[in-house]
Structure formats: C-alpha cells, structure tokens
Amino acid sequence: MTETRSETRGASVIVNVLDVLRCFTVEHPVVGVTEIAEQVGLHKSSVSRILNTLEQERVVDREEETRKYRLGVGLIAIAGPLLANLDVRQVAYPLLEDLREATGETAVLNIWDGSESISVEQLSSTHPVKHTSVMGSRYRSGLSATVQVFLANEEPTRRAELISSGEIDLAGIPPVEYEARLDLVRERGYAVNYGETSAEEVGVAAGILDHRGELVACAMTAAPYYRIGADELEQLCSSTRIAARRISTRLGYHTEG
Image (cartoon, rainbow, N blue to C red):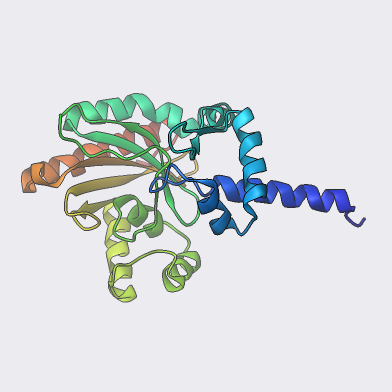
C-alpha cells in the first residue's frame, strides 16, 4: 500500500517538530526562532508555528524578556511514564542514597542508548562545593567513566564501529591503547575518570547487571577533583562497586557459587 499525500505530510511535520525539540540542549537550553530555523533548515515562520503549538501544550515556554524559548514542564508529563517504568531507576534510587551517604559525593545513574551515556537519576552531594550535571545529560567522551564501562561491555563489532567512526571521542588516545584500557575496565568491573574530561572532576562508574547478566546501567560517583586524593579515590571505587553490585542483586542478578 502506498502512502497518501496527507500521510507523507504528517510524517514530515512530526520530523520537523522533533528536529525543533532537539535544538534544546544542555549547552543551549534557551534558543530563539532564528537560531532554530538555521539549525533545522526551516523558514522562521514554520518554526514559529511549531513553537506556538508546543507552547500551548506547555512543551516549551517563552521568556518574556528575550522572547526566546526553553523546554517546558509539559515534557515531564510525556517523559514521566518512561522514567517511571525504568525498573533499574526505581530499584537503584534507595541504593544511590546509600552511595551518596557513604561517599558524601554526588551519586548518579546512567543508561546507554547505543552510542551515548545518559544520566537518568542524580542525588547531589550535600557538600557546598559539589559536582553535578543536568538530568538527561549525554556523554560520548571515551574518557567518561560511564562511557568506558558501557563500551567495555559493548559487542566488539559495535564498539569498533563507534570508535572508528569518531562517534566516541578518544581525545587523541590511539584506538589500540584505548581498547587495552577497556579490557582492564571489563576485567575489574569499574572505570575511573580522574580529571581527564575536566580538570575539576573525578568520576567512578561501575556496571549494573540485570537477571540475565546483561549490563543495563551504571552507578557513578562524581566529585570535585581537589577533594579526591589516592585514599579518597580508593573509597569511591569501593563504594561505587558495592552500590552497583547491590542494585544488580535487587534486579535479580546472581553469581554461581
């Protein structure tokens, strides 16, 4: 059966709406009509119509002073069921609280979408100076602790494809050397980012396994670099691994013997 003209047009409109929404990022949470039009390749009048409709549904909000837009609370109603049904998120929350209490630092839960690590839960450190990120932040730096864990457990062909295509930024590290690093991560079950993606940040991540033994998420502890010496780093690694193991157990994972 061939598509009718209205079906084709409807699909195109949906794609345009999604393209507009993707213009709102962590780095650029507030954007204007002109900026969006340039990014998506649509006329400003078309972008304005899309944004007006989204504003009516509270998916975006317009700032009175700048007349620019930011994502609105209406998105929560849309994304809420998805987040609520992420079993790992529900199971992990109390154990992330324990992790934060044990380390005093920010505890984070990340999932993998096939090419990026995405934060889906975060419990901020109680220290005045802390390391945090926006919920939904995406990471594709090969030096990120969570990306290392996910890639270390990725299917070899897919991992090689991500690395060779440049989708994963290796920051100049030769692929062979990086693969050796992933082998170590896979062997010990956790990864460390000791000021490598940012001179001000330390991150430790450990994999979370489900009842099938498949990696479904990462538990991560994030802390300011200045506060983490060798002893503190050892504690972060231990506490993060324990938290990930406990979450895995709650998800039904168990080892023989």
